[in-house]
Length: 114
Image 1 (tube, rainbow, N blue to C red):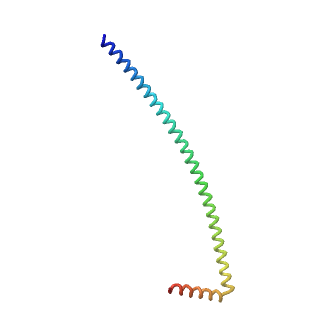
Image 2: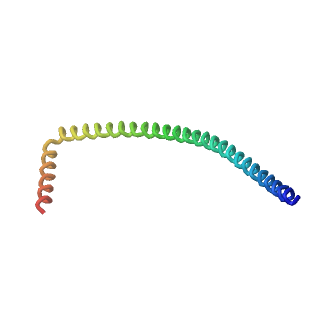
Image 3: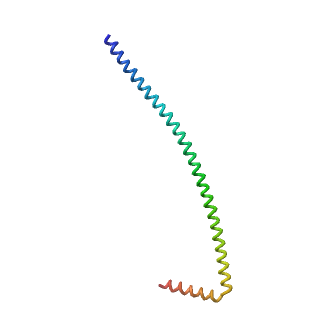
């Protein structure tokens, strides 16, 4: 009889432990499922954000490229205009141009000696 009482209390403890283990395993499984769902949601959100940033970067790149092309065209036009003005000035005042070039050369030579 003592053996059966001891066995009976042990089986109650084992049953309680088994229930506790089952409960913990169920909670772990629930957490795994929730973590998998969270990972999927995070992956989708990250993908969307990446696509959005990529789109914004592409748009900004195209804007910068367009502006740089406009700036390059403007610089080329200014260079051509300046070159035309220099040629016209040299044709109108050839002696003054030669004198200015000689003076500039003398200044450079004097600075180089120091």
